[in-house]
Amino acid sequence: MSFSLTGKRALVTGASRGIGRAIALAYAHAGADVALLARNEALLTEVAAQIQHMGRRAVVCPADAMDEAALRAAVAAGIEGLGGLDVLVNNAGGNSFSIPVAAMRMSGWTKTLTLNLDSVVQATQASLPALLESKGCVINVSSVVALRGAPTMSHYGAAKAALVSFTQSLALETAWAGVRVNALLPGWIDTDLTDFLRTSEEAEAGALSRVPMQRWGTAEEIAEPAVFLASSAADFMTGQSLIVDGGLSAMP
Image (cartoon, rainbow, N blue to C red; front, side, top):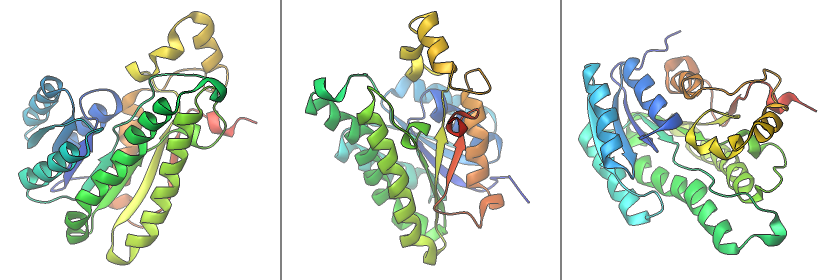
């Protein structure tokens, strides 16, 4: 089996930092050319320079995933810059607040679903013609919170659970054409998006108390499974959720 991505063309959303950045760099290391999409052009340019240093092509596509027109235009620019597309990684997302349902404003709910779900659908629609042509694959970065209740994070959990369902439905719609669609479900990963869980030693201990490995995961530990999903080693895998969470989801 081969985990090489030599000759592949990948587009990664949310590629300026954290998991998205790690995936983009891992893909380049495995031989892929990469289009990078995120809001911060300066950070994308830094990632692009690292990719180019590896001898691979990098296309910088700055856009806000919350802006549908800008997102679709950036995806189109990335595909054009790469000369096609073999792998789409829908990684852009996040959660900026925690609050009980009773106190949550619907504007916060809508914003969270727009970022974590709507943007995925939009980027996927913009990419599908190229992916159907190449018989490529889609990797949707969900979260372990999609699998169980997440007190004070119902908005985020609902968005990520919907993303798993979307993954399964899209996989069934495109399998006939040779397109694979899978979800990657990280647990608690040490990035700036989980800083809210490290506001105090007590908060951090509470988060890690449910992780059998008793530590944070790293972005690189998510990037390697993302390479697998994009490679020929996963050619018979579609509609699935690959969980990388240090055992969290196995806890009773």
